[in-house]
Length: 425
Picture (cartoon, rainbow, N blue to C red):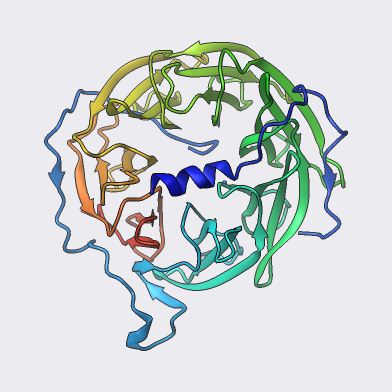
């Protein structure tokens, strides 16, 4: 499975030799006409070590939907959805604008090309599945957000030649809308309104052979969006692959946190400005080794915190924000082996008004979740069995029950596993 993930990562556009900041002009519109992230998250407080509590699997244990038993093979309610492609990534949003939450899987199709697969939600926990062959690119890891001013959530997928293409839903499929260029090579994208004009912009983490920085594409109705690039440092000193965006210093403009994946260098914080520039780069909690991370106010003091998922050692680490752009390591929650957190999400799963944590491992066939206390502390982890290891997990309301549901990209099972109301009281 790790080899499959490495293959997908290798499909990201290779770095060019062009210096960061050298451009071919403004981003342009595509004549064809056609997503903790800000990522939100937070972290633990109280050193909870070991002793996983296994949740009662009876109401949430996934069951496989077998089309051979009758009924429409493209319909499913709960259980496992079987995509036509391997699920390297999973996004959850109302892509078609009908008011119901949908699922988007990106992965390799039968021709070993990156493409998308869509399951459209009905709002009752069931889905109608579709193939969206026009949603293709050079990366299986899209960004999502409202980018065209119309109903529905758009999808941005990296393409060759330093580009990323925005796709929007049209009637029954995705169609290309615009192409944005972020030289030298976009490694990650986040959708956020940077200039507070009510229209979302795109922040691209770009990396060349020698330098890295952030390119901002400011949204516009015109064919060309305004593009601004800030060079932040040398790749030899810091080679970021992860990007978080959120308001960190209280000035109303989103800021950014960059991190090297699985490197003991913590985060590089930069403060955003309305003109698309990022300033004052400062290292934060430099001893942490984030595999992934999310932003959220887990201690409920009104400031965003960082929740870092670390694999060596396996733990979740909380760095609390001071509201001025600074962070301090507050505590860590150790995780019993062999589980290593690969992806996480933050939301109020049990309906008590506090953020909880849910995490999956690419190899271990279980999901872990920690109920938050609202003060940065968490109850001991509870485990829910899965059909295989997983690479993505998202909390969302998929059925009429107000308790949140979970959609999980169980990669080795070749499925998207739906858990309806797994933490309902």
